[in-house]
Length: 51
Image (cartoon, rainbow, N blue to C red):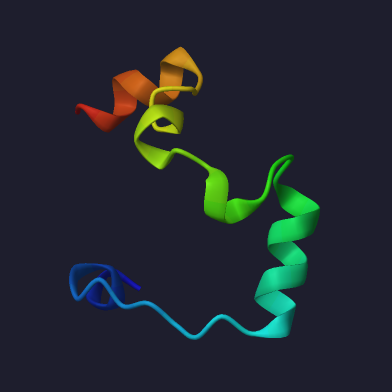
């Protein structure tokens, strides 16, 4: 997994991936501002990401 992350691997968007995105996110996946959402998390997550 770390190798794939390091290579910034992106897999194909299959119908299953699209269905999961519809189920998991409250708004359409393509409209999510990920830069803003990165800061919307628990304090514990924010602290551990800097260590």
